[in-house]
Structures are given as C-alpha cells and as structure tokens.
Image (cartoon, rainbow, N blue to C red; front, top):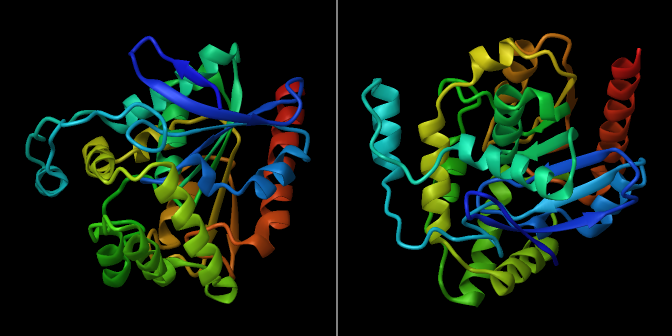
Length: 298
C-alpha cells in the first residue's frame, strides 16, 4: 500500500478504492482500529455508489507513524477535563489527527472531500469540519458523539471491555476479541468473523502503546458542541440501538446540534459494521453524498 509523508513528519499508510474521477470519500478509523477493520467487500459497495474511497491508518496504529515512548496518563487527562482543571500535556489531540487527514488530502491533490468516520473517527471528522470547513464537502458521523462527557456514555461493561489491556499473546488476543460482544450488533453477532479480524489486525500490527495516546487525545479534545452548532455543512449521523460503547444519545445529540442534519437510527446495529447492514449503510452514504452534491450545485 502507498504511504503519504506529511509536513509534520507523520507518515500515513493508505489505500484507495474506486474511480479517481468520482467524488472523494475519506474514511477515518476509530480508536485503535486499522484500515482493514473496514472489510474490502464493504468498501467496494461504498465505491459502487460512485465514490473514490480513501482509507488510512491513523497515527499510532497499523502501519502509520508510531510515537514510540511518548508517555501520557489518559486517566489523569480525563480527571482534569471533568474537573475543569488545566490538562496535563498530551502527545497530540483530535485536532492533530484531523490535520493528518487533511494532510493526506493535500498529498492526493484533493481540494474538498466528503468525510466519514466511525466512533473516534466520527470525532475526528467532526473536528475536520469545524477546523477545516473549506476542505469538507459533507460529513458522515457514525456511532460517535460530540465530546460532551455527559452524552452517550458507555455502559460499565462496555467501558471495562474497552479499557482492558489487550493480551500480548496472539491466541489470547484473538480469544479476547470476543469480549467486544457487549457492544456489537446482537442480531448479527459473528464470533468467527470477529476472531478472524482480530488475527488479521494482530498479524499486521500489534501495538497497544498507541491506544493509550489515542485515548488521551479523545479526553484532551473536549466538547465540540459549540463548534458543531456553528457548522454549515451537510451532515448524516448514523447510530445503532445496540451500541453500548457510545450509546445512541451520542448520535442523537450530534444530529440535534448540526442544523439540517439527517439522523439514521438502525434498530439492529451496535458499535460495529455487520455484513447484513452493508447494503443499507452503503446506500445511505451514497444517497447523502448525492444529495449534498445537488445542494452544492443548486
């Protein structure tokens, strides 16, 4: 896969799917997940909507740049944020991760793109729209939240599963992937698929250290509510009833904040992208982009 070297020195591993002459859709991953967490067959369905899809590994995960050795305590950052105290230093924030995505667009010679992000990726694309509005044609925020700590809070079981240290042993790591069942789409739960993805991600890059810095970035970046309320951009918000990691209130509030946004609530979706929902999601993404293009040319 190709790599982009940004002016910041960050290198991003990326891949593209579709016709380069089609509108660009930049897809941003969630917390600790690699670009392969978007199955290629799902990306192919999105590209078939008439989109040129660009995916990449965020910094500190996959095959992109790692900030080895940079220490931070996410718990200390969270405590300070909740108390309104000065934040301890963090290696980077969601603003830096948003700038990485914009830098990749620069590398590809793309002036404006449609952007989609899952979970933390949703937080990043929201930040892109707020901080780089001229580069964003439309936004799709999936299973995410506006950063208000009182909105979309995880269930205790989901929080504990997310924060558990991943086993270093490959077989134990694969087995532990099933702990994510607590936030998955219950109707479509597929343990074989989950373990196969865990194996692929482990073999491609096992790097738990990066998760600590990504989590600190989320905590340090604060509430985007005011920025979202000021946006003037087509926005589609997607969330699922089964999501216990970022509960549906996170999506509801995001849609409430952005004037004119559309909210797609799926009763059989959790904090994942189950295969049976790929056609529904791909059509929703394609329809949103086409509608935004019509608005843009009106």
